[in-house]
Image (tube, rainbow, N blue to C red):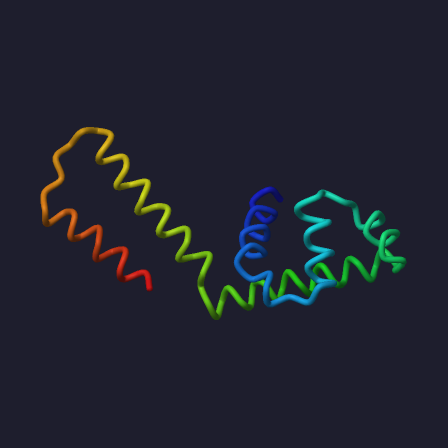
Amino acid sequence: MLEKTTRINYLFDFYQKLLTPKQKNYMEMYYLEDYSLGEIAEEFDVSRQAVYDNIRRTESMLEEYEEKLDLYRKFKQRNELIHELKERVNREETIDKSELLTFIQRFENLD
């Protein structure tokens, strides 16, 4: 569950500008502010089921955006490359020019 929540939070960060104000409000309240479905329903004077349906539809939309645009996947890959490079530097290993060029090429290939 935590893994799904983390993923949805990242997808929301990347794609929230593509959502309607109502979708943004529900997602922020549910995922970022930890409101329950009932609390959101009360706030907007709608049924709990309406909130649930809206959140599930919005999650599906975020996943579709990710399938098409790949922003989260590329973000994760960049972070992995940065982490790998930092580890190499912190181990105080020498990194020759060809290895650095390989890292640069891997970054370039993400786009």
